[in-house]
Length: 116
Image (cartoon, rainbow, N blue to C red; front, top):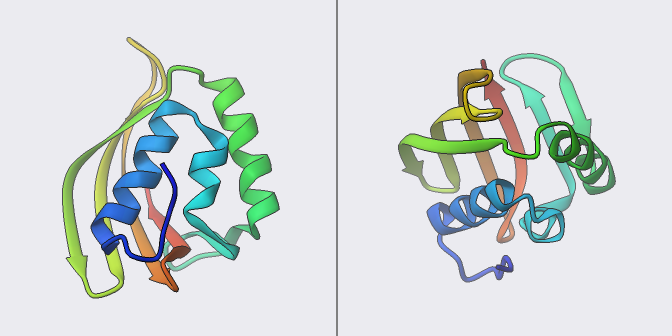
C-alpha cells in the first residue's frame, strides 16, 4: 500500500499500521514524512527523520518477527489520530498497551508521540 495525499487521516494511519504488522518496511516508511519525528509523549524525541525511522524499524522487525499491533480504539480529530494499541511481540510473549498520537501534515505522518 502507498500513502497518497488523498487518504483520510484514519486511512493513512491504518495503512501504516497494516504495513507495520506485515513488516513491510518500504510500505511502512512510505507513510512518513522525510522529517518525521517519533517521541515519548511530553518527553524527548526518540527518532528523527525517515532514515532513522527506517533504521529503527529494521532492527525492531528483525528482533520481533511476529510483532503485531491491534487497534483497540481510534479517535480522529482533524489531522490528529489517536490509537490505543495492544502490541504482542510473539505468540505467548511480551504484550503491552500503548497510545500512539499521530500528527499528519501534507498527507504523511509528521510526528508520533507514544504514551506507554
